[in-house]
Amino acid sequence: MSSVLQHRKVQQAELIALGRQFADRAKAELGEVTAWIYGSVARGDFNVWSDVDVLLVAARLPEDPLERFRLLIHLAPPGVEPKGYTEAEFRKFLQQRKAQVLAMLQPRILLIDDLHLEAQVSRATEALS
Image (cartoon, rainbow, N blue to C red; front, side, top):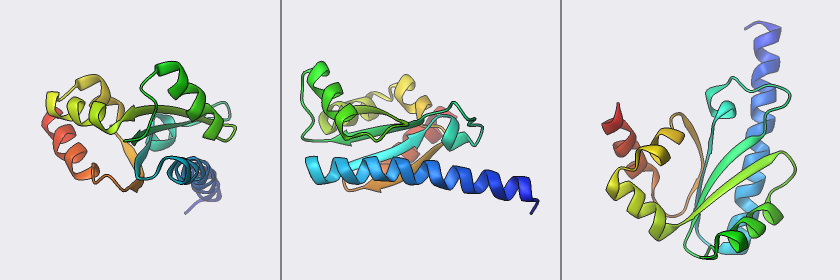
């Protein structure tokens, strides 16, 4: 493996660790969660200006969008761009095969799956293909 490719893999691993830090903080605050990295870090085409896009699903997220955003930003370390859905919202999206959400998770890196959603997401995203 070339040194450039090795360096790139190290950079990606560091960004994934940042996303995992956020997922761990969210789990400590909210209980069971499922979280994925999506976007440029998951695709591998990130650059120096890229943030780590993390989609988090938790039963105990605030219903109010502004409160939810404040909580997620509070939990996110610098460089992480969180997006969150309640478990009920996300399961509804899966049931409806909501293309906007499913397309966002192609490709994705699973960080934590307390809510056992990854298998359902895999089936739903395969159906889009």
